Image 1 (cartoon, one colour):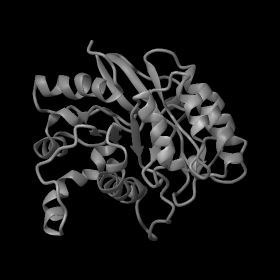
Image 2 (cartoon, one colour; image 1 turned 90 degrees about the vertical axis):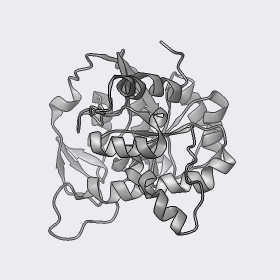
Image 3 (cartoon, one colour; image 1 turned 180 degrees about the vertical axis):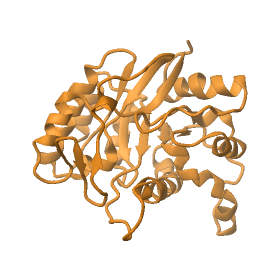
Length: 286
C-alpha cells in the first residue's frame, strides 16, 4: 500500500461555490475561467470517480492556481469552507490538505480547521508565508505543502495550452524552494515542508547557487521534501543524486497526471511511496 500526497478532487459543494461566482475564478457550466489562463474544459468524470486501488492514503487539496486563497476574505472563505466540507466527506482513503486565506491571514481559523482532522496546510508558491500560520502548523507537528499558485500574467500570444504548467508553475516552485531555504527555515527550524513537482527542479541548480555566492552544497535539509508529480525516472533519479532518496515522496497530481514509477528499484520505490510520506505527515510506521 502506498501514499499519494498530491491529488485534486472537486466535490459538489465546491463546484456549486465556483458556479455561484460572477468573476474569476469561476465555473461556467464545466468551463473553468481564470485570470492569466485560457478557458479550461473540466471533465466532470475526473471529479466523480477515482481509482484508489493500492492507496493507503490519497491527500486532496484545493487547486491553488485558481487563486482562491488570494481573494478578499469575504470571497475566499465561502469557497474554502465549501472545499473543506466536501473533501472531509470523501471518506477513506482520502485525506485533506487545508486551505486558508492569504489576503487577511487568520491563524485562529486555520487552527480550528486543522483540528477537524486535516493533514496539514497547502499554500500557493506565490504566497509570502505568514509566520503566524506556520507557527500553528509547528504547534501541531503538521506539515506544509507548497503548490503552484495562479499564473497571473497572461502568456505571450500564440503559446500552447501547456504554457502555464511548464513556465510560471515551475518558476514559482523554483523561487519558493530558495525562499524557504534562505528566509523561512531560519525562523521555523522544526517545520516540515513538501514542495510540489520536485520544487521545479530547483535542487539541481546547486552548482550555480554556489557559483553565485550561495552556500549549502552537500547539505540536505531532512525536513524539506519534494514530491514527484508530472516527472519521471530521469528527473527523479537526478533529484535523488542531489538530495538523497529520503526526502522524495510520491505525488500524482491526479486527475491531471498519474503517479510516476521512480524506476530506482524496490527499496527506493518503497521509500518514496510509503516510508518517506509517512515521515512527512508525522504518521507512525505501518
